[in-house]
Image (cartoon, rainbow, N blue to C red; front, side, top):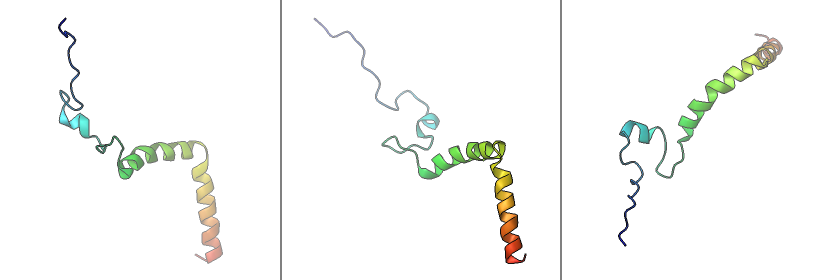
Length: 69
């Protein structure tokens, strides 16, 4: 009996090259800078919404006051 099932395309075949790169390494891991660029905007947004930004500003102003600036 003949094998009639089609073969699956090897990874990366049939996809545009712009989609296959997208910051991933050959092993499937992202470069650390790409991962940081993806996470930092969301972290800043969540920090500002939760009041983290105000806390940081208060701490920075108190440190500046202690230094005499």
